[in-house]
Length: 190
Length: 245
Image (cartoon, rainbow over all chains, first blue to last red; front, side, top):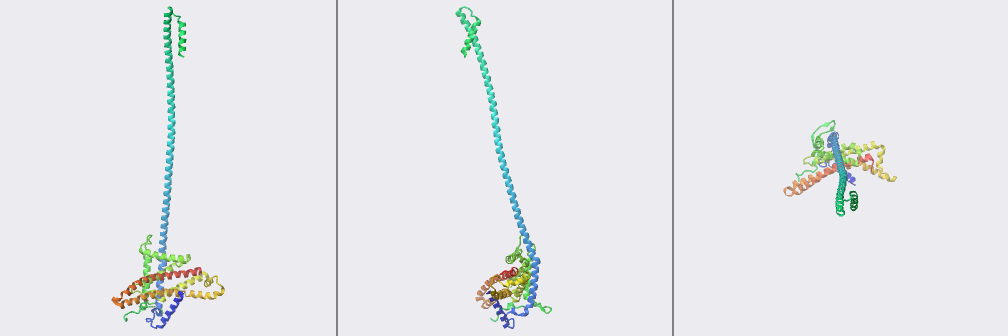
């Protein structure tokens, strides 16, 4: 449709040019004498522009765009790498922190166990010492009791001898009296 | 309105320096002047602007890169990897048309692309080049482009002439589209410019306001037509390379 309109327009233009013999009256575009210089200079201008574009501008721009792309990609890669390194550092830090925490817990536990063992040892030592002291005290008590008993026996035999002498009016048989008193005292003490 | 200029006068070719190469008239004209200015400006943006090749671009370098990436994306999307070879040509074509169109809006300048011979020459180069690429890549098989697949044989007798005609009309539609847009826009600006003068201080404001708005529209068209020319070149190239319909 558009093509048809355009071609009709073109034909109309040609007729317009044909009706006006003097180009100034019709369309200057249809003055054939101006075609050659226009085409010559169009060729020159366009070839120069094409040379400038294809040899100078396009390589310069594509090179710049490629370098910019490379730079951006490089920066992105570097940022990505830095990010990964940071993540690795954080992970290492957290691992060390966890290790340190674990170590601290272990040390606390071991210290606790060591403290417990030392306390037990001290307790046992104390217990032994106390037992020994108790034993010694008991021995001492037994000895003192024996001394007292011996004193008592002696006193009893004195009293018995005196009492016998008063009652019997004669001195007692020392050996028999001592044995009887001793037996009585010992039996009574049990 | 005797003092009012003919709106067609702005399209006249004026010879500034007469000279000939053999019998060929190669006079330097007002049109050639603005072609050269367009090339110099394009070189300024794309070579001077890129001189530092900075990783963080400046203003001019951003413009150059924007143009490059715009056309590179167009070629990549429409032609694919095989189009890379032709990218500098399509970029040059787009930049040349764009700069000529925009420079044409500068007062007292000349609009190179308002000449049918210029746009037709560019379209013809595209057409012939694309056809040669198609024939070289596909040989006789290139002719299958005119016979759509899966069509009954009897229909081909109708379809093939239509396809051939629509293929041959391509350079005409491509060139007339650009030429007619430039011609119509500039003629309209000139006509309303004449109204401003004719209606004087009291009534001239309305056409002046219209011209301001129209100039904005023409800037858009200047870009749009360069874009259309470039993308159609890409599509034709894609047809020739991939024989796709």
